[in-house]
Amino acid sequence: MDLALELGQPLTVIARMSERELARWARYIARRGLPMRRLELGLAQIAKLIGETMGGMEGVSIDDFLFYQRQEEGDDEELTAEELEELKAGIGFAPEKNDGE
Image (tube, rainbow, N blue to C red; front, side, top):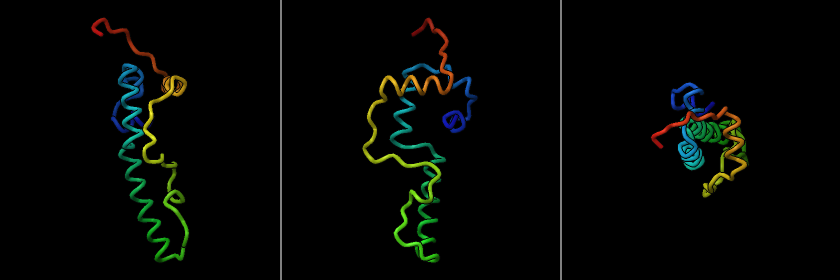
């Protein structure tokens, strides 16, 4: 759903993309994140700074201000077959047969 929102496309369009394209998007998101997630990270950094300087919140981390947990740097390994199948099931992946590929 997040990918559809970020791309501005209905979920039915995302569900028809090729498996190769879906895997490429999954790797891209794992490495760089989606723009809204990057925005959330920036806002969390600001909230942490305000909390530390104005509210006396010492010893907090940025993760305390995030809705979603961040992935560790360098955690950009390929999806396993099981993860890819779970992703396809989650978005109702049903590509249309294309005679040109």
